[in-house]
Image: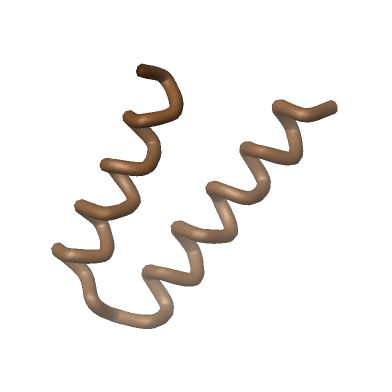
Length: 39
């Protein structure tokens, strides 16, 4: 459940904002969060 939520949010953001800059920011935030979780 927890893993599905972030993925859906990313998908929604991509659909709402097709701008490459926004997608890059979303991906960066996702990766940073993942890295923080691992540590």
